[in-house]
Length: 91
Image (cartoon, rainbow, N blue to C red; front, side):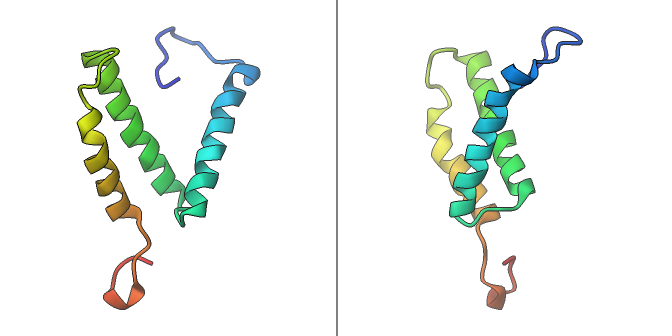
């Protein structure tokens, strides 16, 4: 899904549709929690893709990076969470 190991490969529209559907579901869930900025959602996918790739490359089938999920999510939420305008932070 995140790499193209076969040069020139393009998934068919039917094969790609499940990815689009999954991403739209993610976008909707984030919107219900006040995260609607497309860049914030893209950042989430970068973070999850990165930690997933590290897991698969370094400990396939294991849980080597599971302990990093909570601090990673906390860091992300601190960055994207809507902030109070009266404190001079992002709204």
